[in-house]
Length: 254
Ligand code: PGA
Image (tube, rainbow, N blue to C red; front, side, top):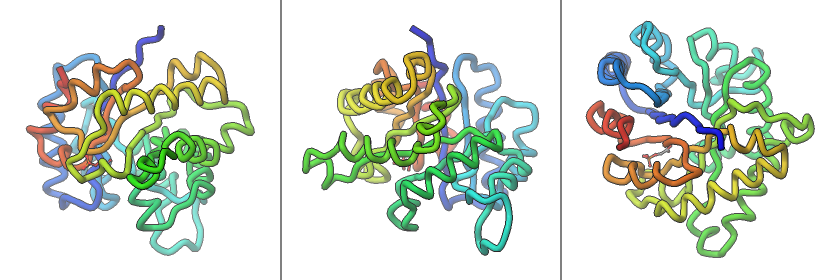
């Protein structure tokens, strides 16, 4: 079986000013200088992207946008295009985070357009999916996830191609910022389901290569158990990515 390289990604959301962002990424760069075998990524607010890119310098930290528009340019007040993210030095972009879906009414259809646009531009999409507590308690978890995957990756399915670099993130909505984490077994069960969906929709090789991150209250004290599950390839971290000591502990998850 292909060994997938772990990825620990920090989503800073709407936190940290430019100076704090620079300081944090410098600490992360210094703390991961000698570290092998794990990829590290940060997703600062748009206004800090350029400064963080400069602070990253030659260190191997990937830079991501937290969202993007699917058009390249135009009259879309308040939006940022994938091209602009690339210009700012991003290699990745988070798409369809549950906060975007619930607070900003993003749909699977617009998320699909964003994934397609990012891919065309050579930005690696980190597509987020996840069920609410109500859906989990109503026994609808797999149905909801299948629908999110089918519709948010509809363009990939029509083309019959999912790049192996694509990243998926399973983030149960009930675990984000709540301190409640899915147990490693609960997360593994879903990650396995997602990998099987990739295999059925594309092929075995793609399923064995695509990384699937877990997100939702990942902390230094639960990361090791989560990462020891076979289909969990990394973490998408909010709160615990805002301080260098906790984020560095997550990066050295064992
Ligand atoms: P959290 O956020 O780690 O604060 O729960 C995770 C996320 O929203 O990606």
